[in-house]
Image 1 (cartoon, one colour):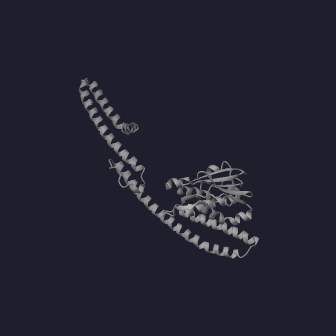
Image 2 (cartoon, helix red, strand yellow):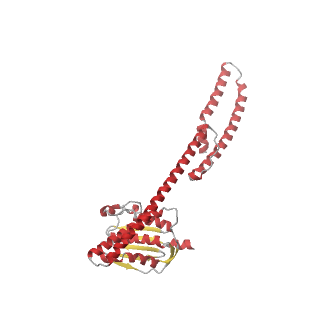
Image 3 (cartoon, one colour):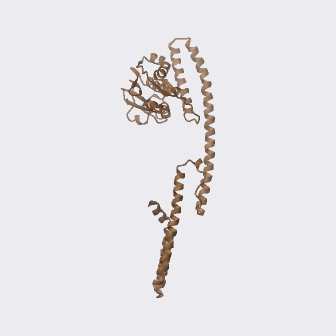
Length: 329
């Protein structure tokens, strides 16, 4: 009904012209004292023919509208043909659309090429920078002084940032970088904890870990990245106290700290790219990328990540792993 109203509105000039012509004929017959009834029958016939024309034309417009509506939900590259042009305007619009399709295709190709070049550059850069980092780590292993421990901690943070860059570049890559297998949750978590062992010792932060003894179908590398980012944040914002890792039934991995917490107004936005919130603004080192990557990776893995926090009380990050079992079944 709405479409018909639009159709009538578009053709209102033609309809008004028909009514005006009929009125002119009636007025002319009336002024010349001719029998007005003589034009009633032709007017009726013209009205019937006009109604048939309107119904036929409206049906054609409706088919065209449905076809265009279906095309609206298609990607530009998938639109191979358009409805037949019925007017000069249609031909002009189709020519403009075809030109825009070509421009979009060229821009997409150029953007893909730039992204590929950038991705390849950073991939090479990551592997190259790991060599001096490894060399420096081996050098520092031979010393046990406050300075060497501080430098080792700084190197570890640099390694994390390097891995973050690599994850950021690979996340939107067209090629699949996921390998799903069955893993013990304890195995993945303990590997992540081992990387932060010196950080826990140096900061005098207690670690409470409850063995989980459950297995899941997941990608070890990407899930480890998520856990390590959460542990890194927990250590960064916990001045004293502890970090607790445990499983909440049925399959929710929880990492809880006694840190400074997150402001209530920041919680809804912590997964946004580049958003650092109050803690990030005071820390100056926060990038606002870590939790964003965690959310994106969890979405790819089919897991749900959720954060609860209270200022000066601590933060709990929950990762619902139950969906893995559902997909496995």
